[in-house]
Length: 203
Image (cartoon, rainbow, N blue to C red; front, side, top):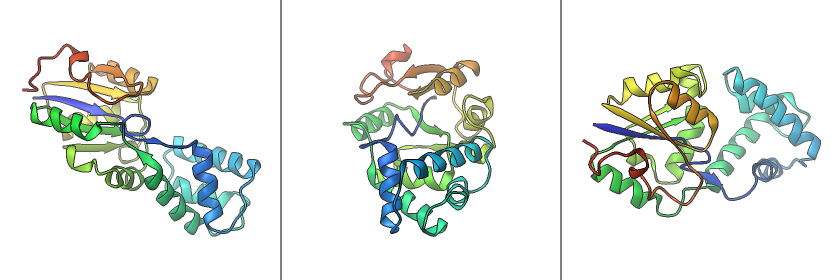
């Protein structure tokens, strides 16, 4: 069995508008007025907490900035907006079905908080195609650290692995643990699995 593992944000899903606009809309929905300073303060607070894998990084970031709205309500609003505005590439469903029918095990390996990442995956109708989903917060380390990759291997045993992602952390982390790696640049997944030099059957 061979496994093809996908990054989530920027690969399986992408926002159809800039993320700062997604954040601003979520804040406005709760009756507050987002400013450039507010958005920058949120990003700074969130990034610091996220990198350290601190609990509830979105909620605590909202709690830490000067915005006239409840942090819990803002968190719920942002989660809804993220799920609503994420889109898979064209033909993603057909490509995933084809890879599964060809015998490949499919996984997701994503930096993030499980609740948030699964919400987006489900909203896009893609969760059913994956045999394993590993989220960095569950492991306590983000890609390119080897821990998330090793956890994926434990949850989805296979003879060979390949990573599909849009960032250096995807490619560097995969290569460091002996996986094939492919930089995704948009346009669907029709080139898979040929880019790995694998035969057409996954087994």
